[in-house]
Amino acid sequence: MPPGQAKKYDHNDRDDRGLPPGQAKKYERFDRDDRGLPPGQAKKYFRDSDRDRFYAQYRRDADNWRGRMRPVFVPGQYVGRQYVVRPVPRSIWVTAVAPPPPGYQYGYCGGYVVAYDPTTRMIADVLDLLNTTTAR
Image (cartoon, rainbow, N blue to C red; front, side):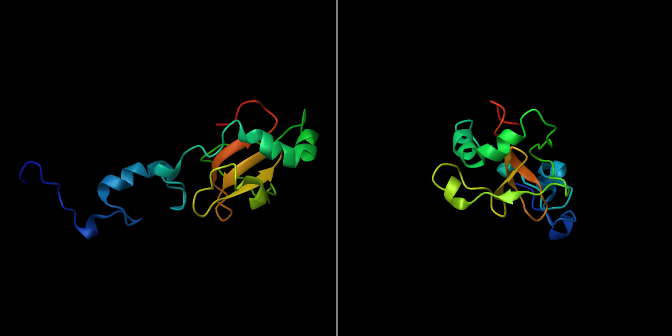
């Protein structure tokens, strides 16, 4: 191949997800179900300043979780089926927070606001309403 020319790949050279060989490696850590968050979308959606807006909405429930054993939600992991995640009304976040990734939504559970995929329950980002730092 002449220098400076990119290698063309054969369409039969793709992996089982239909990705070209160089792209497949980027997605390895999201292999669990092909709908995982691609690296380009694995970003932070919440800022510490968003906590006040969400806390105002969920104060009563969040305060009930203080000092109690809570679930642990981590970006890139899944919300366990044992947890009920209530959708956060769009009116609460639309003017203050970046929209969730395509196919994801904001939900509330156990003193956390999570950006998650309601189908796979994969978490893109977490905002802990009880602690002063976000759970990342």
